[in-house]
Image (cartoon, rainbow, N blue to C red):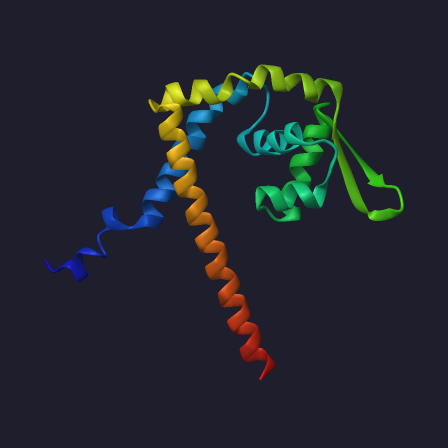
Length: 160
């Protein structure tokens, strides 16, 4: 087989490797996060709030690169669990402030073991985790730049 034909082998597809890796890693998080009483998407929201609280719902959506419609039910479930509060921002009724409750802030102490536990479960070192993270962030940035260029090109075609 020529190199060009080999490019279509499933084992050579970046999208396949990323998809399987993502599902596999997130599945590995499940038993660890079950002990905290949260799901992986909820963990991501909590990480954003442990970095800074309060934040607006839009800020959380932006930092997690998720649509607001995806974040809203996560916030509702976390509020129902007593981990955060949601309230309309003074002076801007459209903005929703999200803040940790004392219980949500205290959960951070339990979550401190999650990264080390996950590195152990995945049999990777802190340096390997950092290297993988850096590679993934470069891919995310490249994909976002590509999507932005596509949107700009589509906009310029529509403007004609």
